Amino acid sequence: MTNTIPVIDITAFLEGDAGGKASVAHEVAHAAQTIGFVILSGHKIPQSLFDAVFTKGFKFFDLPDADKSKWHPTGPAKQRGYHGVATRGLSATLGKDAPKDLRESLFLGPINNRAADFAHIPEAATAYAPNLVPDTPSGFDSALIALYQAFEELAASLLRIFAVAAQMPENHFAPLIEKHFSIMSALHHYPALTEAPLPGQLRTGAHTDYGAMTILAMTGAKGGLQVLRDGGWVPVRPPKGALVVNLGDMMQRWTNDKWVSTMHRVVTPEDLNDAMSRRMSIGYFMHPDYDAQIECLPSCIGDGVLYPPITAGDHIRKKIEASHAK
Image 1 (cartoon, one colour):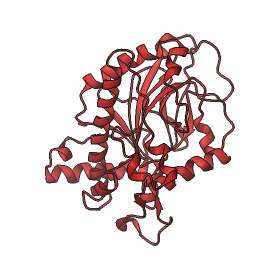
Image 2 (tube, helix red, strand yellow):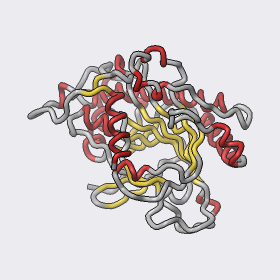
Image 3 (cartoon, one colour):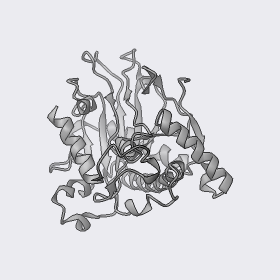
Image 4 (cartoon, one colour):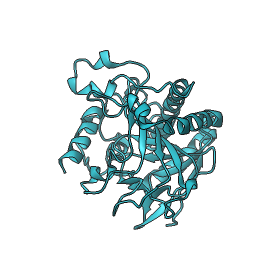
């Protein structure tokens, strides 16, 4: 097996050509079974939108901490608004006692307010909590919302591709994402370091993602994303305009472990004072409707079902609870 990330152009699928759809789905199925990561082109999101978010995002993170902290959530919704450097640590999701991650973040949830639809499920309240969207610098809020909506549309298209790749009807997942609770880590900002990290401290600790899939855009700089493959860490360096897509634990469960949710991390640059190591990424974490049933796809049953059915909301909640209990 080669230590490279598959590169897949989904243009033919999105344009509706039957032969092209089959070819793209075949490539996706192979990647899903072997590494769970792809570098994606042909996604139709304009580069100008990414450029606007990254440019305004750097200006936002250059603001004084006191100004940024105005957008920090004060209630129980932990994935909304601004979170400062070294306040979160993803290695903890694997039960590891590691220092907090060397990044600061800004989170958005669904743009359409679905809270009333799930008022009968108290645990769903934080999944559909109101957003805290910074309006500084000018136009930052509208750019973030436009990008969330673009990712939302792309995720629906990717789930059509995944359905065909899993030998299911193309629209299999569509009824399960009408009121999704997807999270956009609108920006993860990795500042250039001014002092040595603690032992074992990374920009983002090793982890797998909880949801169905993650769509990732990033700026190019030192100290970037790595994927665990064949016992070693493989760098992921998409060309400008391309996105990185990886499967999450929910998709692995949906496919009865036939597809893989792979460990990944963001490493710390070797040169601490290298200003060029400053980087930023945007991740869209696709979570279906809170009450959507996550159960083995009929095409993936094989010799038996490994996991009982569970709702998307309970799956995410139990993952979080398990990480906090370790």
